[in-house]
Amino acid sequence: MSRFRCVDLFCGGGGTSTGMIEAFRKAGDECSLVGINHWRAAAMSFPSTYRFSGTKTEQIRQIGNAVCPRLAEALVSAALSA
Image (cartoon, rainbow, N blue to C red; front, side, top):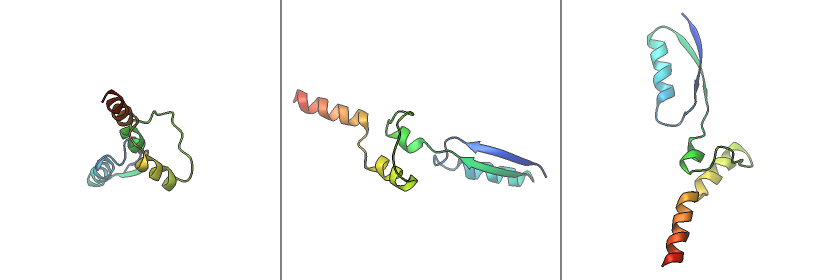
């Protein structure tokens, strides 16, 4: 049995971590997994340098309550041209 350390840079995106762990198990190997998830902020078009404040839960809430900056720009632009 071999042991591997793996990093899922897009965890939360739809089962890649689960599939990877299962593939290692089927091969008779073990995988220690670290998941890094910046997807929520990226999906809302926050730049990778944007810093959120508070606990992880509070940060997720901030992202969830945010209006996508590009969408906000388009809405304001449409309102001003109407």
